[in-house]
Length: 320
Image 1 (cartoon, rainbow, N blue to C red):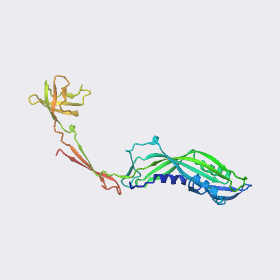
Image 2 (cartoon, rainbow, N blue to C red; image 1 turned 45 degrees about the vertical axis):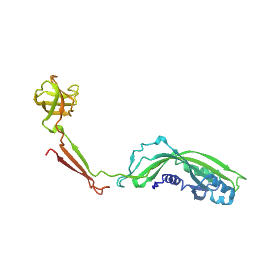
Image 3 (cartoon, helix red, strand yellow; image 1 turned 135 degrees about the vertical axis):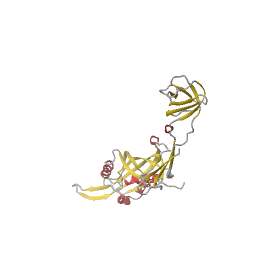
Image 4 (cartoon, one colour; image 1 turned 180 degrees about the vertical axis):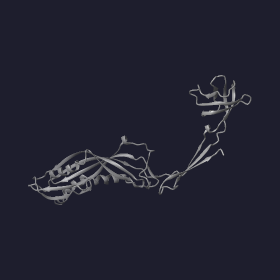
């Protein structure tokens, strides 16, 4: 496989973008703002950062507050499974590209807050949670070749807190860890495919009613038909699959000419008259020659279409 849709990468980047501009404001004892900053966010894991805390407290003072995030697990979501034969096409005009139904996966993320004190952690938490109720929808361009844009819900699952309070309250080694967990109900896509557009459609139509009379060759039966009476195929006249009116009957050649045909007569099926005095099997039907043939061509006959779009329809009378 040579394709690379990067569904996992796109979901991860979109998740991180939700937290990239979180402000943190510090106040003095009188409630006056003394400092404002944007909390930096990086991809990482908690274990690596805790080791850095143990190595150099002086450096950590410079990096706090800080947010780290990571994709922890991925789970197949059977409840969102779609028919794999379905085809998804994006907005019109992007060409002849489509994708089959994507595979639903739940992406589980951790978001870890590192702060110097609980107040800073609570301020960041309030900013984040105000946007989750408990879901937040993010839009991702999953397959740009086909114009596929998906709305991915992200659910806040809960949080846990851990505090390192070594030393006094004002100790430089004091820090607060807050771990938030989220689930993004996203998808993994198969490679985009190309379909061949239909540029011409030909349709042949046979209309028995267009004939004034049709001739039926009958075999294996008894009785005579009378001009003007009704004949049918089926259990009774009201529910018959085919009906007609007798125009003429030649008992020697067993040719029955009928008009006002409703439905389609069937070869080797029993034909009766309403009076019940005649019953014959149909041996031969008239040739079902084409009455009309149509050819439909898109205008213009290129794909994707450029300019106004229409259809050229040509009807040919095959009886001529």
